Length: 207
Image 1: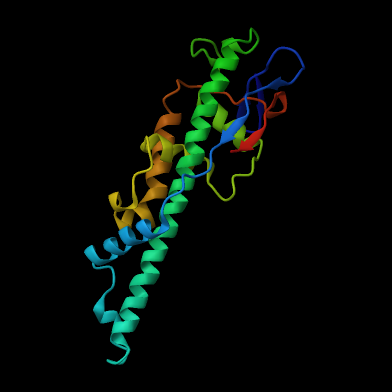
Image 2: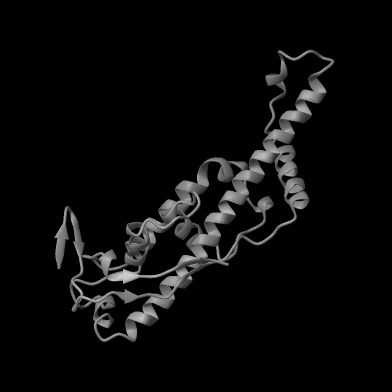
């Protein structure tokens, strides 16, 4: 075991680089924007997100138009938040599938097989593969790595926008997904060691 700073890294026999399966990132499913927008407007209407009192400084002649404009802006904001959540889910789904493929690769390698056994120390947990992605600094187009995995752990499929409250889309989704990832990562018995990034190579392919 090698310790760098406060992190423990597994020492892998030999000096050659192990090739892992490619990370196949599926693009977010196409959704009808008009349908999603209609659902977002329903959320704005049903949850009374626009306070009429906030329009007190607007003239009576322009108040109705301003009210509708603000509702439209808020609905568009909800749609943006929803599609960002779907993008996180899509990355998370791709990463969990990649981890399963990596586990198969480890099982087929005599040098790598013992690293996933919890009764052998040091060992790697499933979250070690997420840490490996972070160490490799892969480009995720603005998607947060741990939140992406946490979002996929929370939802088997991304629900339609009308399943969510505005509070979830605006404020809660990051904390919910972060907590989901934290709980999942803690399921591996301690101590868990990281995989040395210089010993592994893989491709990231956007499909």
